[in-house]
Image 1: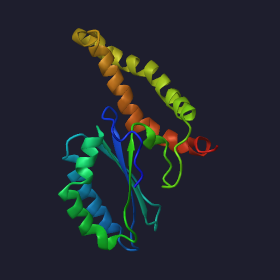
Image 2: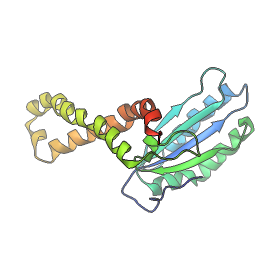
Image 3: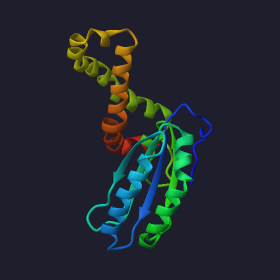
Image 4: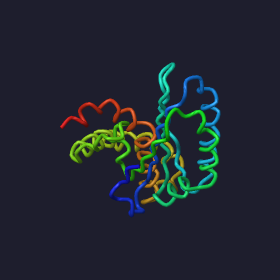
Length: 191
């Protein structure tokens, strides 16, 4: 398992990136188990969602990213007896041992699936992140504007900004950045 150099920090989110290679014919059992473990992880404090990259037809490799609010929350899930029991239940269906990586902050977006690959240089991460956030900071306030007009209390300084910021961050983390990072991956990882 590769651990981020920022493992002691608690102010950033944390992602457990998991790679499972399943045995041929194990897809149905694995998918059932996947629903169970996602549900179990969702009950843990700080859980922020799961992103799954399923294999193409007849493929065997699953990439799963489990997001938590902080490193302690991620560690609590990773080391839980519930996770250990679920892993023991699926072990016979795995073609190789689980690969698990811990990533903090935004490193997950920019880390390619190959476990030996390096995170891109910071200026490229900055450029892609700015390109994603900039248009959202222009569009999201416009989308909120009718509600701000209808409910004047939402226009309170700080509250208005918080709603806009939370919307931008949610869109970046869950909707926009994953596909953008995949599309930009060849450029990001070129040295």
